[in-house]
Length: 604
Image 1 (cartoon, rainbow, N blue to C red):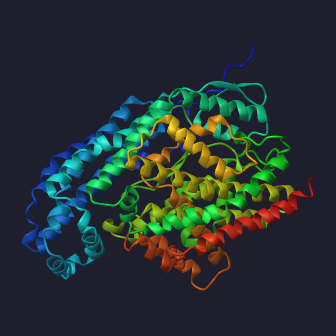
Image 2: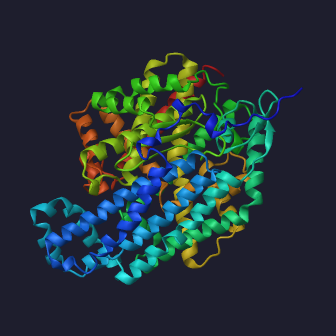
Image 3: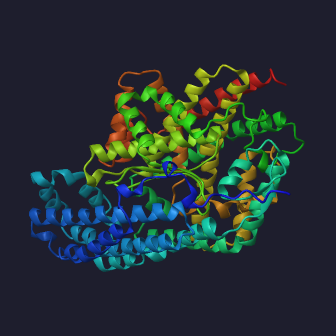
């Protein structure tokens, strides 16, 4: 009798030690309800400060404290509900909690939306005089940021209207998430041993690494057969999302959605352009790697489903979760005992939701609030890429931990621009550790291959996404309809330019835009690429024990949003307004490509 298709475990079947402990936020749903009701009841207290900011520094301070108190409570509600929802997106109870938290988020945004417009009715001189008061000195950087954006803050009534529409602006992303994670049903295909496997996001990623080409091709065609059915729906959600970005930028008097998105963290647009330009200059390196991949796989045609399988066949190394925990602790030793102590706490205190279960959100992330643990979601399977994902997400969580434990609430977060640097520094340290400790030539070749694939995915691929994201915003601003055919045609051309003539253009890859969650995040993806490149520079400084390199790095991890991101990085030792760090990263890619080419010549 043949076995049925492999099924994912239900949430309640997952061993508790492999799940995150959310009882440290709320002991149960009843506590969530109590906190929810309490916050709703306190909202009028915040609105009562409306019209009082001109009454002197003491009233101004009380208004600030009231707003931050409400925000702090809201974070707990939102994080709890989104983590509960993500652990099983088909659970209607937590769909409801998450939806209510989103609605409350919009309510709170509306209730505090008067603050910035009213603050800006005061002159710069009046505001700065307030900040000269000792008890308000803490808020100087926060308030001066608002002053800096004076030209883009609308009158109070208009700000309230936009805040009230927040849920509507988020609905395309929410619709995409539900459709992509809960409603899409992917086909069953045959696995490496002929067994039936139910495709899912997590399973698809694993099968793309299979050494059985037919399995890879079937998984690739199976996934895209579903996206093709819904291509017009996905084009509509994505187009509507982009229209929302462009609308918000226009009403706030920005020149573009990109300028608006980057201005929040005072990132010059030249940083974005520098990235795209340097990556495009170095596309011949990616093309060279694609030719090496085609040669080593021994295929007449290199297809998209050939881009993730190991070049030298079955992986010579594969780590369980427990083994990966041990490797991570060794690899991160150059970051010192203070850093390692937090990593150990992450592993020992159930900050991590480890394995995939039915309905669980795909991928991996680090999340949390100022008053919670910095939780990590994963969908574990035994593979080296999961070890890299683990140290990546641990990098985010330790960054969050240091920030929240060294900064007051007002600066107790950090921009995405800074976030990816912490996570990818860890990846660089892991690569160095593995290359130093593994002596088998095939294992070393596999690690080099993995590094190059990681670079391809994090720098080249994310820059490709960034270039396409900007293209979509520009085209929409021109009035071009973002139909599925228009998106597919242009994405296909961009993909061909990035990967070069070694890659055969698959019809299916033209639809890749339809399954990328990050296209809903508003100029987010470029920061993966800039972060990876900056991380390469920082890891090099730490590993070579440059004077004060580790001290500077830990200072960056503890800085939060107490200064502008570009300035934080300058203090850490990397100037991201220049192109040097990007070119240095490309040099590392080329050096490791040279090493892999030399190493594999011994096996051919």
